[in-house]
Image (cartoon, rainbow, N blue to C red):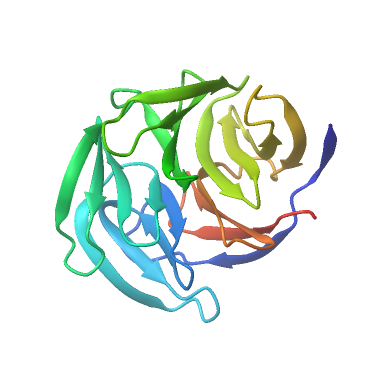
Length: 210
């Protein structure tokens, strides 16, 4: 396993009226984050806040290229990005104990926080297709270029880890500074991983090793 210290490239925020970030996503242009009762977008180049959608946004956020998927208590909502309307819901696999959310290969991948699991889920029915296990609390999940990454947070320490999507074996680990908890994780499809904060209304960009 490769292990190194996370290289933090930039910090965005703190954003007004945001106590903590619950989930993070990327739509190809802008970064979106869940803040409890809103989904918020900002420009990753300027850091400028662009818009928000009034919708329950309690944990992970995902983008499939057309719609947002958003954890809200024990449900995953499918949201129209233009109107903010909830188009459909499916049950969340953790029944409310869910954390990260991402889209890959036509399916959703959902972190289950205290159970230390990641589930691959059918986006139409909510059926669990596959489950892998972690040895730490799962607080975010993302795919990039065929790699599965997830964030952890336990005690005073968070890390970002690349894992084998079949076995869950840890292949690489980036240690965050002590006290810097991560809630929500998303890739920009390139060399940046966007991390939400457990204790402040900020999003941090971390370099993804090549």
